[in-house]
Amino acid sequence: MPKVAVTIPYFDFFPHLKDELRTIYPDAKFRTDRVRFNEDQLIDYLRGHEAAIIGIETITEKVLSAVPELKVLSLCSAGVDHIDPDLLNRHDIKLWWAPGVNKVSVAELALCYMILAIRKVHYFSSILRAGEWKGPVGFGADLRGKTIGIHGCGHIGKEVVRLLQPFGVKIIICDKIDMADFCRGHDVEQVSQDELFARSDVLTIHLSRNKSTIGLYTRDNIAKLKPGVILVNIARGTLVDEDALKDALDSGHISGVAFDVFAVEPANSNPLIHHPHMFASPHIGATTSESWENMLRSGMYGVEKAWTPQSGVYPFD
Image 1 (spheres, one colour):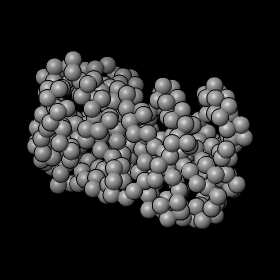
Image 2 (cartoon, one colour):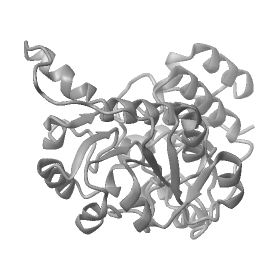
Image 3 (cartoon, helix red, strand yellow):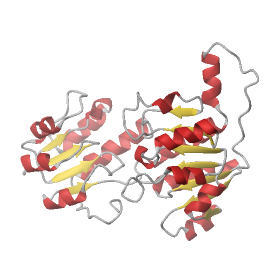
Image 4 (spheres, rainbow, N blue to C red):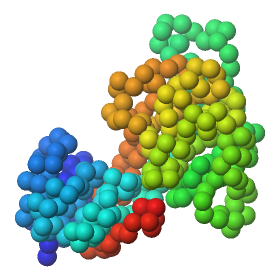
């Protein structure tokens, strides 16, 4: 039986899962703090263990070289963009990762943010907090009747499609994979990226972060968006040029934004979060008890299910 180190501290919130894990690996090592490890701290913590149940810790060459006994990483996070498959392969490390394990929570938040942004809830709330009432400050809009664009239709994007079915909207999707069967079953139209940009009244991003998507929303592509669009991003922060986004908000080309992710996190010093037509949250897409229980349990049982990741193959393409 492998010796297991648990680097993610959230098991303290789910003591029944901690007990469950101990029935499988009685000597499992748990965190007693909430501090994010640096390389040296991570090395010290992992030393002497064959397997690790991790979250978003950065696994580097230095770390793996210092703990050659480590053979398995079991990921609790649904995103895997912080993992280098070439590095793992060089050190013969196997990885477990469960795509879509938090899809319901993230998709529900995306729908919440679409409605919040199109109704200008954040803007009106700021007026109230300033000691005013609504006054002649304009109107929000209904979601019903709008064209909703979904950029990336994987596990989360498909769940967003399902949640949108009762809302009386036109749904268009853009994905590099042919989605013809899914589209027929859900009354959805698959379009090109430029058509997605041009037609979407509300555009929600659900792309993974990889070499083809980092910086995809350039100034030029933001200019292609339909005037007055609502832009929602609960995917990854490095996908959007934030300077260009601010300019588009200032000019009114984008009428409202709801972002849960930013290029640099924590984003407390990001000027975008203070824009009156920007709603910002601190990367809470999967922060529900249901999602975290699913992710932690996936990490627990992933130790014995790990596979070897390959570069150029989803999710590392």
